[in-house]
Amino acid sequence: MPFNYRLKNLTLAFGSLALTYSALELIVPYFLNHIPLTMYNALQTETRVLGQSSKDSVIPKNYIALVGDSYAQGRGDWLKKIIKNNRYKGTNPDYYSGHIIYRKTGIDVITYGMGGAGSVKGLVTAPIIPHLYINSLWPYTLAQPKHIFVYFYEGNDFTDNSLYYTNRFLFKGYDENYFFKGYDAKLFYTPLYFDQYLQEEALERYPSYKNDSSFRHMIFTGLMIAGWNNLKKEIERGIKKFKSLSSFNEKSSETFTKQKSIQTLKVSLDIQPKPNSSPKNIAIINEKKITLPAYLQGPPITLSPKQIKKSVYIFERSLLFMARFFSQSKISIIYIPGPASIYSMAGPNVSYEAAGWSGERGRITSKEEISRVSLESCKKIYGVTKKNGFHFLDLRFYFRERAKTKILHGPEDYQHFNRTGQNLLAELIIKHIVSNSQNQKSNTCKE
Image 1 (cartoon, helix red, strand yellow):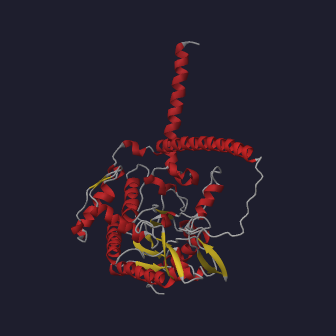
Image 2: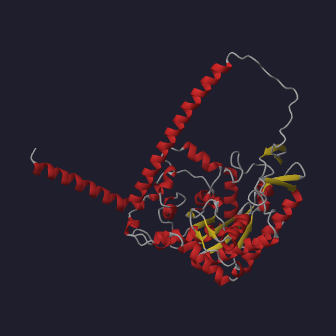
Image 3: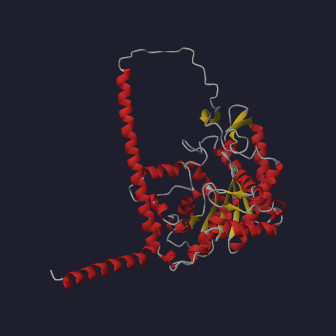
């Protein structure tokens, strides 16, 4: 075959490949919301809201935005089950409160929720950076949300904010990830100083905030690179699992051979509980005693009044910073109780999570103390919203009533709502905020 002929064919093949690739770069950005749920992480963090399926198209219109931690993100047993059952099906099913709001009202919903985030990351970093980044891309113009729902979770938002203060304003040094400037704790309660801190540490510290690289427009390329990296991880995980299983089978075979000749059976009729065994929470649900895990998340009992004050202040400054940026959006704060505050316990005490402060995994306190601290904590957040003119919805009463007959968490993940809990969360938001948008009235924290 003549060289010129082969060169011509090679040029045509390369040209066709380049043309196809260019076409995909032009087309794919308009179909991101059809990406399967199991490929969702292949999208860049800043553009993942475009791949969410709780909206009619890639770019939402007159939409609701959810912000906060993993509760806003939608974690829980419903999501875990969906991922497990749809890993290789290429589907994008519903899995959290945002989907339910969307299906029942027809209003587009996106979530900026970030697992493990306190108020600074959840209310400033997570929503603002993606919003700016998406609007810097050639195919997109993303308007501000019509309504923002702030999911404030009493189970860890107080403690996360308090720990955030310790790490950022008291600690002076660095870790393996980034340098802490050690901001002046004496100026912590100075609004202008804290706002400057938010600008520098919650926004400008992240590379994507001022990303002017032309490669950021290559959305399909980024998707392919991330997908390839995820595929390699899956292959590596499969190889490790196979090796581990093979090794386990060999050891089991050896152990069985050694023990086969030993026919000794020991039985003890005096079985005592282990001295360090975890206490259990026994709840009365539908007139039955149901065993819940020990160390349920609840209100911030382990925090001192000074720590609570700092935590609430961080929430308020972050909320106001977000409100100034999303100046065209209406904002509502949703107060979500922890499991320890929801269920009616059979005994007088509750075993609650206290990790991170006492050096212990958990503690035990009375039901009355849980209720008292939950009420006081709710009032702190309500005070912030009332002072600044935002709408407030306390969900504690409604969840306590439903928890008398239904389990709202678990059975695997008791730190987040299951499908029943997600449905109730969405129903209450629709009833008290979405459907009543013209005449909203904040409900106060009551027992």
